[in-house]
Image 1 (cartoon, one colour):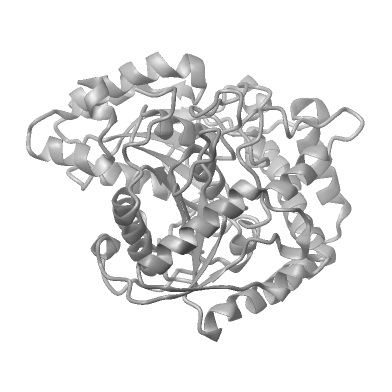
Image 2 (cartoon, one colour):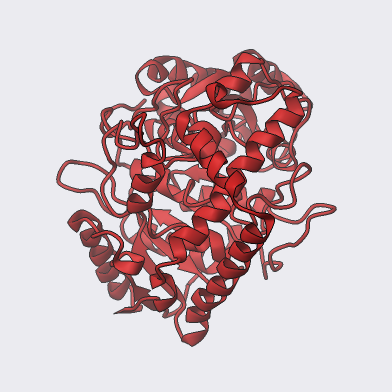
Length: 481
């Protein structure tokens, strides 16, 4: 049964429970079996919650939401659950045995939807890098090639879904951390619009609005249904995305109409040469879109070519790392020094501390002005932007290691991998990575679609159309259930 269930998406698993063909307990037991079988090779799950999951699944009071009884893994970053460990890739938090006392709003909405939390997944320290190789828990390995990165920072969640441990796992994105792992692991990864999913009760926004929360999945319908279950503002949120015209689930299978789609394969600012495999993935996606009746043409953004872009983004990011260490020092009541975190984390935090408050606010002003220029492209007649998700195939593990004499090497190497995702964290626009291409080595090469702010509906319609035209559900990595 476990292997049969592993091939079903979350929507299908929930239907089995509703039809009384399986019980929530059977789903959870089968999931635990798969995790115990695969995790020693993949290292995706770092905090098993098996006893709690079994008790939750057997409880007659399990909420009757759309995913009643479906197992879910939570990424061990930001979205915390009551009574469970929360380490965010930090040895410091592991050593103090940090446990969160309550659910975030998102965790509560996951529970209300009927999900059963079976564990928590690996993440790089504080979600900094686009790979999942924290010193404290070791690397998560890509099921398509275990010598390769899964991407980050939601790499543990992506590896778990790609290998079939679960059908859906929580993820979040401050510079591409949903889309990058989805692209590297052959999954669907939607970063929703800023304000679509609440970050409360702790936070109104994180890092000046860069961060968004959702999941990685294997099907567009799962992504749409989870978004429908968790979207919407909560009391005290500083802003909210526009109210959708109808449920996101209704967009799956709906006609997107004839869209004007711009194609960008050259990295903004020509900061790095896009790998031929990634260009080929976008070109193939463009041909597929044309065959579906859409108008596809090359385009680009002069707004992203500014030599100041990386510096301004890094000012915001490094300031966020300085805040992050101060936040955990306050919460734990213990000072955090250079020996408590990885060298890159400390170097970034020190960089952040070197900026004045005026520097930080100037950075925010610059990025917001730049974001307006970027977003204006959608006002010029285009509906969708098509890009590679990342600029090269999934890199080998160890690619982002920083030598002792250059602790910031990893973050600058990361910039060359991910030129296409961070701009839309700055603008707050929704972007989705889809698994439409595999290279000659059998590695997934994701493509990214970006819509105007608040237009997840259009992305879901188009993504579902592409999924129907070129299905990926039957593709399985070498390491899978």
